[in-house]
Length: 134
Image (cartoon, rainbow, N blue to C red; front, side, top):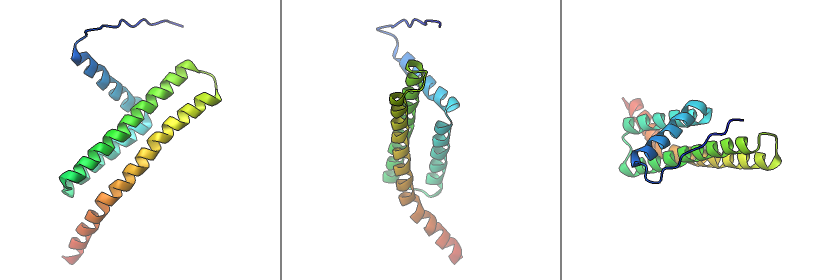
């Protein structure tokens, strides 16, 4: 096993923190299927929000929910990766930690989906109704 030493800089430039954070998001997006799914849904909701002209309050709710689900997926990936490093063999406690972290993402995704339906279904029904009256 190769040991990697990390040099900790106390006063590194702020941009390095942002760089590493974006690298983490990019790596998670590239390697984690569920993150890709969440991002695709986020893009779809953004497009639908523009098409259906949702209100500022509705945009705010959507943005908070995007941040919640994406953040939880990033934390879930960090937890799973850390557990894989610390406990490479099958372990009941490791499984519980991974499953509960994944469960947190699932709860947020389900709640976000329900709220999305509450926001978008009436608008879609309204558009369909107007189209049928033509």
